[in-house]
Image 1: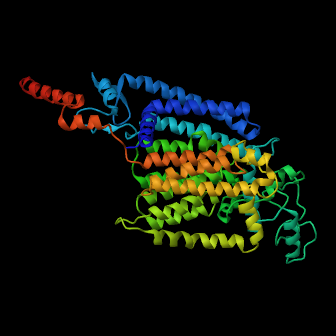
Image 2: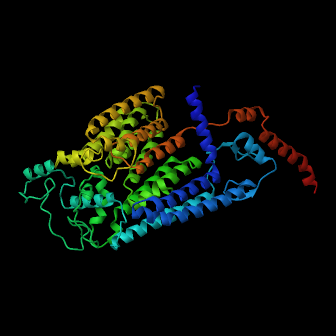
Image 3: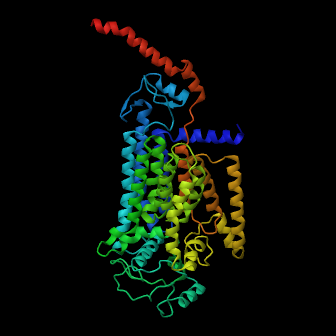
Length: 535
């Protein structure tokens, strides 16, 4: 075993033991409370600060409650149904020696991370789900609908809703925002619109009432405004694939107010898909519990869902697709992964790598089946966006997310790639090409040293690739770190548990303290049986 493999196994075991049980809940919720408090103090966005004010209290209460349960459980055994009961003498030392939990007569030895979450953990999770995600989401949506001053949503919410509204009117949701693009739009305009239209194939922008939310019409009940400054020119772009417009369709329905907010669709779809994934998976261990926390209640999900959240339903569909892939259901996995890829380009790396590990129920390669399924879904979806204007589609979906559209974007976190481009803007195309070559070389080296065999291998590799891409992309933001975080959690969840080899050997030959304790209890029951019978 190489030194790198030993280090990886040691880190995996250390993290598993550190985040085991209620101790892990204390650490995660306390860290989440600290993050929420820092968001209140340091964030420049009002909607982020509002979320931090509400969520910090929920996380703090959850951390304190988890600490109380953890301190009680140190002196009490935890029964299978989640209630606390007295621990037998010597049981704590046995667990500490072997690194196991759940010793007892006729009870299966379980490695850390494999036990079922208790009712306390589930109750605290539901409390945090309501306090850190549902309540901030409802309040932010209500403040947006009631036109309170200040920013109560991230720009992607309005972008998705405007694109969906244009779709309902039979218009092309993609546009070209540059001067060259504007000339092309005017030249190809079928209706002969007047000068000033900045979109391909759209009718002239009509004047709207003050009750309209967007300059090109939209949901009633919000203040009308016009994009005057170049700082907001990025709102003219729709940097998603056509499937993302489905989340904004309700916003075009008149009379439903804030209920049509795209964030509600993001949150509902995410929770439903994650629930279906875990129910289909069938296992309910601590590892699945941690994955649910990352996808629903921790800041990796609660903050985006309350303020923007377009990445979270993409991650939820990817999660379901990975589980189907691991369960050897290539056709279903292809359908779900194609659905995720029809929303955003961030799901495409998983679509490509899934082909190499796809197996059917008999263990045979299923590359053809999963490829045909994904191509059959993705090609019509992509063509529907390209059909009305290939140049506009390329500008919105490819050039703008890469920071090559020539305008400032909100994805401008001070990471290495963005800082280099800020200093050397004339070298951005060369830098992007070099980083792509380096990424391909990195991918080849990783695959050659660690061949892809399972879904866990794919998600682990995607975690490292996404970290590299986020660090060196010309246009990026810290929020994209939710992708590598979830990829690593899924890889840990799907990986087979590594048990303590020394403890396993002691259990096998009968010299383990837990086995000796069980034998002593059995002998004691045999000796006392005649006494009880005589009584």
